[in-house]
Length: 238
Ligand SMILES: NC(=O)c1ccc[n+]([C@@H]2O[C@H](COP(=O)([O-])OP(=O)(O)OC[C@H]3O[C@@H](n4cnc5c(N)ncnc54)[C@H](O)[C@@H]3O)[C@@H](O)[C@H]2O)c1
Image (cartoon, rainbow, N blue to C red):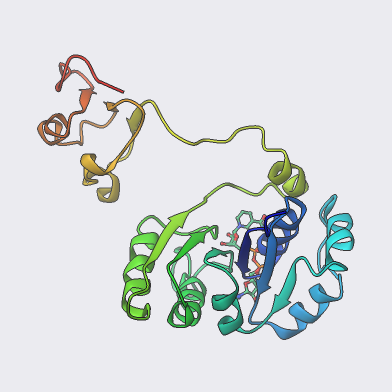
């Protein structure tokens, strides 16, 4: 039988502990990493600091077999796997309404210098638009020579009380899109490079009249904006 895929879960609070236990249930070999030694000791003993339907049973079933295992050592985590889910907290900043992403940055900074081969970091923490690009730059700066690190997002929302069920038996999985619906004037989305988007069909609806239609048409998109004729190729190949 092939060895199970190894993954780490960084930040083993509510989101991370649930994700780690569900990955173990799905057959992955999981190592949980947290900076809080008391939390790690409790989890290693099968003790959960919160209640979530179905989770205690998963923890009981898998912890005895060492899945997930838990550690406070980022060097061990870096050596364990090349797929790392980042699940640390993003509390509200004291000085504004914005999220404090310093824990996410600290987690990446602690892990990346110790990676031994190419790796993928998958962010699950709730973060503002643009955070992944910042983390990619941080990872690129800290990666050992010859090691490539990718940063991806897995931004599904965890419903408290349904988290285990939703993870093990999701009612939908979105793997692609047929249409880009543009409904914001935020520059992060207005200025996105259309050539980097790869939906099944390059069709866009600009609900804000904010996109540079000629740029999108030049990248092979057919774009319709409010009150304006469509621009771009009449037929859009898949
Ligand atoms: N709780 C939910 O229902 C829920 C739902 C969806 C999304 N989220 C998001 O998930 C993220 C985590 O939320 P949570 O409720 O699990 O928070 P939490 O406070 O329960 O857990 C965060 C964990 O991260 C650890 N941590 C902090 N810095 C670290 C570092 N540098 N390295 C390793 N571990 C570190 C903390 O010790 C803690 O155990 C947040 O962004 C939150 O918005 C939570």
